[in-house]
Image (cartoon, rainbow, N blue to C red; front, side, top):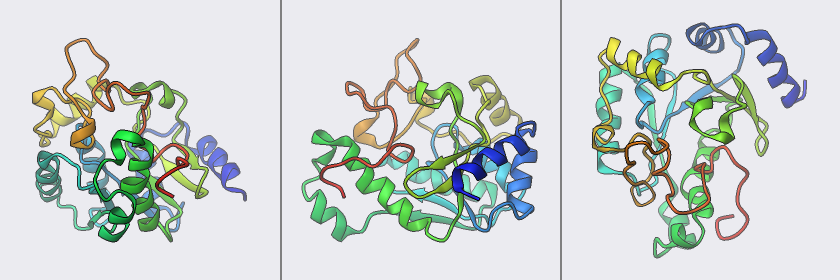
Amino acid sequence: MAAQDRATDLNARYRHFGTSYLLEAVLTRGVFDRVAMVSSFGADSAVLLHLIAQIDRSLPVLFIDTALLFEETLTYQQELADHLGLTNVQVIRASDRTVEAVDPYGALRFGNPDACCDLRKTQPLNAALRGHDAWITGRKRHQARTRQGLDYFDLDDQTARIKINPLIDWKPARIAAHLDTHKLPRHPLVAKGYPSIGCAPCTTRVAKGEDPRAGRWRGIVKTECGLHTPAPTGDAT
């Protein structure tokens, strides 16, 4: 079965499943050969990580360290993983040699932010996901116009790998309630005005009334980090 046909078939099969039932199905019933979760350990990440920890604490959780993250994110990653008992968190990053060759002065993000994301996020993730046929994301429909049409399953056009999106219909109130009910640790930057957290140079505080993702790549026409968009043409190939 072609990859796109498989995604369509999975959406039809599981469209009436709730989040926990969906995760249990894809992680325990042999739907995929090898699955990993990719987590930014950002503002909402504790919810999906908590749900997965209830099923399989040994599931590979891939954390992309771009070398440009907030120190608070690096600390939170370790604290949250310990709190949930996750046993297979894998920190992945671009090699020093690759970064030195493509972005020796760390200025790529100014002239070509898409290429910077490709260098520091997409390429390392694609390398880490070799041998996997699916990966789990925390994307939600309410987050951006580019995500409003998300289904539980969609296709990475570049790799023909299926992405699983268990939280597509989770709104902020439900996320907050889950965090509170299960007393999950919060990312420390959320309380400081960062409802969406990426790399430090490309993330700013969000003012009251602004879109929660307004602080990501502020001032430029960019809404995705690069993991869910086609690879850019240009410097990082």
